[in-house]
Amino acid sequence: MNLKLQFKRNFVKAFTILGMSLLTIGAAKAQTTVSIAADAPLVAYVNWFELDGTTYVGGSEWGVADLKTVVNTTENTIALHPNFSAYGDGTDPYWANGENGAKVFEGNTYIENNSLLGETVTFEGSTITNTLADGYDGIAFIKILSADYQLLQFLSSPLVTGENFSLVSETASIDGAAIFQYGYSVTGVNANPSQETALGNAIVTAETSGTNPEETNITVDATSELVAYANWFELDGTTYVGGSEWGVADLKTVVNADDNTLILHPNFSAYGDGTDPYWANGENGAKVFEGNTYVENNALIGETVTFTGSTISNTLADGYDGIAFIKILSADYQLLQFLSSPLVGGESFSLTSQTGTVAGATIFQYGYSVTGVNANPTQEAALGNAVVSSGTLSLNEVIKASKMVIYPNPATSSLNIATDNGNIENVKIYNFLGQKVIEVSTAQSSATIDVSTLTNGMYIIKATVDGKENTTRFVKK
Image: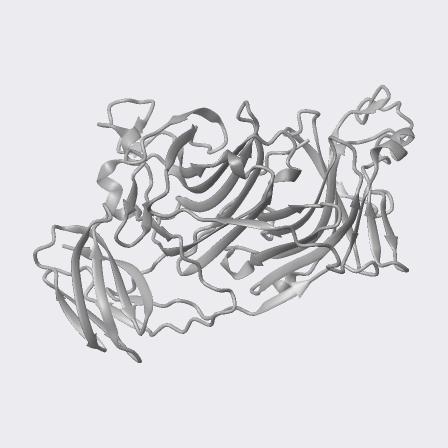
């Protein structure tokens, strides 16, 4: 049984203050590795759903022992079972349906340590055995929540016999993060205690004593065979309306072969001329539009696959979310697994799927999406975009970019660029179609660029300083 997980994405935006744009790429963040030993201070919390697995019913704290999480301090192991305590004596129809349970039960055993927020945290361990019966899923997870317990980030890895797992969260990139949890969960129908032996368990340990599965590394670059698909929702963002294939260009995904980048925009084509009330609501769009640009390669099913890339810049306006994703679907296009990472300017991402553990997996997709209200084309310059590349930044690399000032912004005829401790090697300016309109080479700490011939609107500027590329946008008026 696989639940459809939804993720609230949060992103870093470019900023402009008093007509001067300040470009920086952040220094490397502190890194911490955590695991869960058998003597750790464990917390138990459960969520339960109707038997469809998606209709949420309730949640509450639960006893660790009642969850049937068995701690063995001698062997430093934790045994995770399906839940049997909710079934009771089988007479309560809320929990019992004859000899079987009446709810899908997600039992979470974890540690909460909010002091980890602000760091890059790796949660690791290994699975000694997993004998859970079909229909029961065991995972390791990281959850980041807001102060009012809204889920902001969810990372997970299946518990595979004899294999290590490793989950990495760049917690500082999650806006509003207040609570950090890491641990394990078992999800499936709350079970009749008479079925305990048959339903099995998963035994985990803090020690990374298992094997690391061979991985296939993939990326999306400008030569990839791209597919575009759109889903749209009512303005509440949750009521699904429809979905269909969509042209890559109509989605406004711009492929730049020269720089090996993809530029991802909000959707403007659905709005049309603004006269169709299905898509237009006056000057604004009438649907929440999820535009997906991806590669589909079903030959990867059965492998451990890591999708990597980096975000050169993300200037998407508030209300528009850009992510990298992996989706695994069944033959009838039911979503079985969804992994995502926000597109944060100047940072790389890495998503790993152990596809062989996803029952019924047939279709493997990896790529990017931008979600937000379908937009009026007149708003294109204001709504920004995200520029992504196949290249990645090492987590161990300390990036110390020179501070750079661009002024005036907006600019009419000349744009000045200055840096405090480096040489500007190259400056490239792109329009929002991804077309390069100006390129200037220099070897000084400042430069003045003639932008008088540019048409009015928003532009992306990429400046290379001592080998490091800085990206932001400016307005020509």
